Image 1 (tube, rainbow, N blue to C red):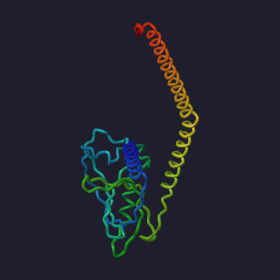
Image 2 (cartoon, rainbow, N blue to C red):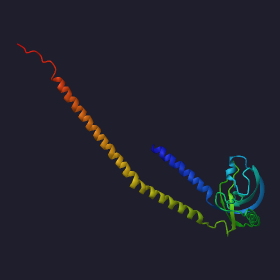
Image 3 (spheres, rainbow, N blue to C red):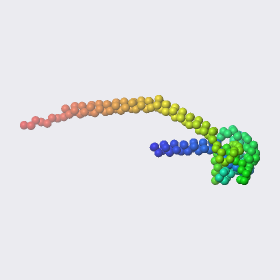
Image 4 (cartoon, rainbow, N blue to C red):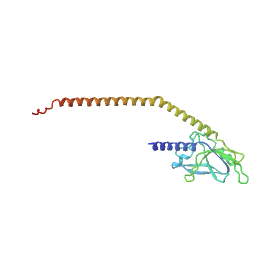
Length: 226
């Protein structure tokens, strides 16, 4: 049972960690090299990785999506989708897709004369599933070695850790004040029942012994020898 318990905890930790990693904002320092628009099919399960704003019908099976192409300092390609999140999850409340696309177009640069920018985004990139992180904002920075401190992630994770600690303390107090005394009372009651059962067995054995002794007095005695 110990292995089962730790396996369940590990699965839960992976689910929660994956959810937070997908949802929380991430930052890439890149050089924008292009933008384009492409029609994407949304008729399979990968639709969950695309935005679904309130102003778009859930019945749509495809739509035009804007993309931002970039390259990081190591020369690795980065491609971001540019979609509004609207009022849906995750709660970035992004409504400026057109403005962001224009800003990305204006910040394009070449390897010979790079303009480095930090792209804030959420989500994952997977070439097999054709899913892309969603760019939330773009702003220029001095160079590719600029240190970005993820203040939003720090605050959110700190709040979550505080909430988990509070829930754990509440559960510990509830267990100490309610569950453990109740279990102790149940154990004491069970001990009392067990003691009464043992006493009843002893009385039964004693009564049976006396009954057998009484029967023995009625047995025929052997005749006296001459």
